[in-house]
Length: 577
Length: 36
Image 1 (tube, rainbow over the protein chains, first blue to last red):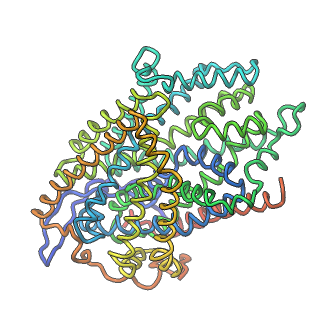
Image 2: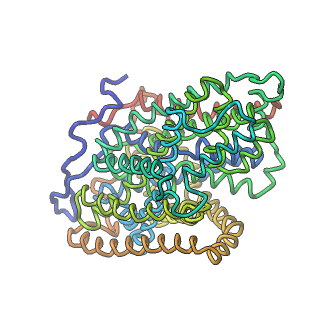
Image 3: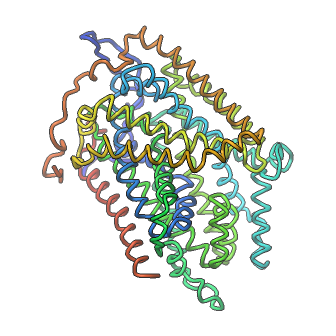
């Protein structure tokens, strides 16, 4: 064991002054932020990955795509796509961070060694920023539902018939989220919704203003363990439900688990199952968002990224498979039966989470409101640890492209987010506006960005240098087969997924854009943000050239040398070469 | 639940919990860079 507390942070970590050496010329650079502890960055990346999708989307996807059999393509995607790209992102971020860069465009310029990659890297700022427009809104739903459970104002009466409770739950959801019509939330009915959004947004901005170590790291250091405790409480309650209604003996925990886990191997022959599994991995572990590269750029050059990246991914899997795979559908099955659960799954992530589960909690008797409160508080924590990671890449980008301090950089982000969020909260009818952003940015473009990253890392930066970079300071030796996977398997796998995704989804989505003015408006917003960020890259380029920074990554980072063949951990600590 | 269901559930849970446990064990038994 070690003496230093892992959850503490170094008092001087937030603003270390450092030197950059270029062509033999050493000069003082800007003050640089760093993570206070190693576990801090791991929890921050894990927190970014763990979100509503772990508890709501994963079980729905699994149940709809072969049950337990879904886990086979799911783990294939994790091993051949998710974890390799994750390692690449960690290594790219740390490497470019050593050169003084923290934003995705600058990082991709260094790794891709040129301007086209720098502009492609704009996606790594635009994606998290655009997703934050609606993600923080959804986070505020969790806070609002938590408040409703604490105050007993969900409007669901357990003495009513299930159909009436479901109608009441749907009504509460529609009123709270304003899905019945545009502008409803800005009326008197929507005051609580706007208030909860303001609290959620304000909390995010407060954490961002406090900085990497004192804000984000400090928050995730208590939020992640607390989230695990909440999940454990709900899991124990669900697994001990038994057969709550003796007159319905089939509605028991074992059959609920069977609904989720019994495999339908025929689904493996359906390409849609493999596509859904790869999509879930991308949603889940935050690759392709530009978040990990930003977070990793604040890691010290000598710090491990191989074990840290694997740990962050593993933590996410515990929340997804270990908690999400056991709680959500089991609870639904026990109280709503097979028919009700199938309907819940078909209602999608938000239908399951915000309309069905409140009815489930209502059936739990006197403890139901408490379980509901713990559940939605946990979802709120999960949402905030994710949403805060969406603002940070944009703040870092404005800081280094426009030469701003953290506070004015944050103000730029706040201004953009207020416009984006205003539109999201106003155009709520049928959720078309933010669903369009979710599809094009939060689904399609993360696949594109991941492709850009893995090609830049494995082919431009070079797998030889990249492999050594991953292992610099590493405490584990990654099996050499992953070299081949990162260079060949992941790009080809990703290309297949991307093509299949386009063939399956694009025609309908393009048709929707032609028909729906709200979808056109959403695309207009995305384009405007993209153009603004590209202009900032242009400004940043001039600044970085004036500062003498190696923006095209022409030279290896200072002090870089090929990693020793194996982990740097002493053999006595269990290093496995 | 079928035997296949049990195998997939126990196998999946063992994999994710085992991997996470091993990772955290490695980290907690390794050097803490923040104290350097």
